[in-house]
Image (cartoon, rainbow, N blue to C red):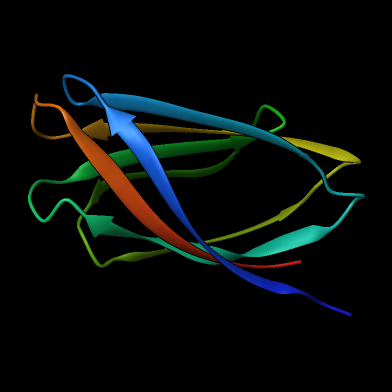
Length: 102
């Protein structure tokens, strides 16, 4: 039986760069879905996401509203790291909406 989750994530951005980390027990699930930048309105983003050290998403010039799809098989535990670099050298909060199916 698959489960669908929708979550909103906020990543603090300082001088145009930010990093978010999380760790969860996932019991060897296949995780598929997308995430979409919902704020800020301006600029472009480079997004690098790693799950257990393996790159699952590496994309540049992402704008608000673009949906970034991913699919990855997890281990027993999952450590997720997301690095975001903004085209503007300012402080903000990157807000992302994600839809995930396991």
